[in-house]
Image 1: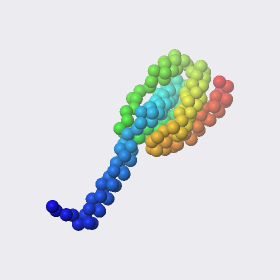
Image 2: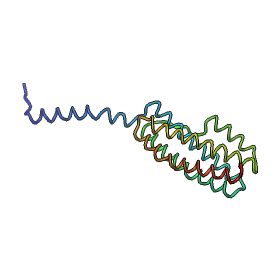
Image 3: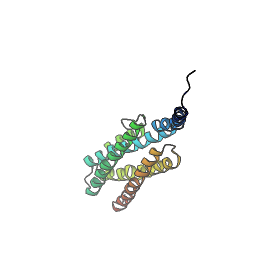
Image 4: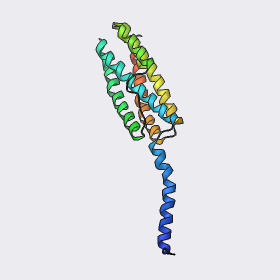
Length: 177
């Protein structure tokens, strides 16, 4: 029988131990739990909705302040969606490529409106309402997500969304809607 020198046995044992210790970490870093993936999809959905409604507001609104807000929504939420997609790609998670049924219905309503009525509904729904919901989603993600990268994404996005919410509330107060 062939006998390994003690240093070779120790090296082999160390390598085996290291692989067994770090394999679960590497595996966990590559996949999200179903709950985490669901939160990531909801974050993507929120960004998609803001981009779509912001683009529509750029077309339909004649109010310069609302147009400025809408452009900020398109710009900031496009960045947020890009970050969300990058995280999803790194975690082998699939994301929606368009709005969900709820947001499609809102867009259908928005398309039928014009003038001050459009501006009022846009600020109330996409500005205030959706940002309140997204802030809650991001806070929930920070508290409940198991994946550190997903928590970091929520932490990065939350101040931006809170700033949008404050801006929308100010806009709603200014326009008297």
